[in-house]
Image (cartoon, rainbow, N blue to C red; front, side, top):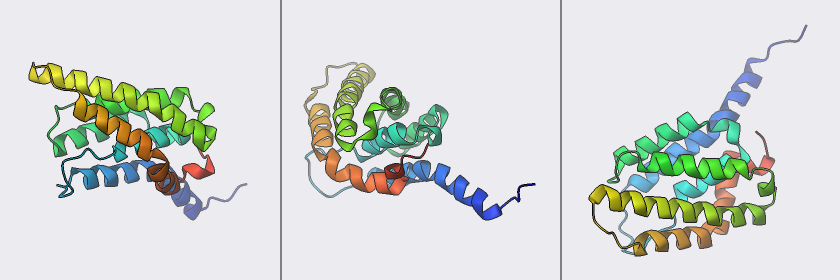
Length: 168
């Protein structure tokens, strides 16, 4: 009969909880006021959602991502449900290309359409929410900044979530 090891259960639980905990930390970090300037910063949380969904999809079920998106909306000034919808769309894109995203370059190339779709959706939702045509410049600039910064930001995120080990 196999022996039950409590430390092994703790290690398994912590391995599955790590992506969600990293996302919570990034959401809290990005919700803080930043005295950096007016240029758009890369969307670090979206990069982490994409990487975790591509490399560790079982650790981030859709319901959890929806809840994290609502948390992000409640901490920020975006319409309620915007980040939740954005995270679910990016999760769906990333899980569909899971096998193709085994190399780092494929992961980066796959992120480009995901961030473009998320940016277009964000722009449309914000325009509809405010019932006015909002210039897409800021959203597009942030999407481009995210795509360009992906290699530099993805490596620490991969290390944090354990995605470099390709565990499910």
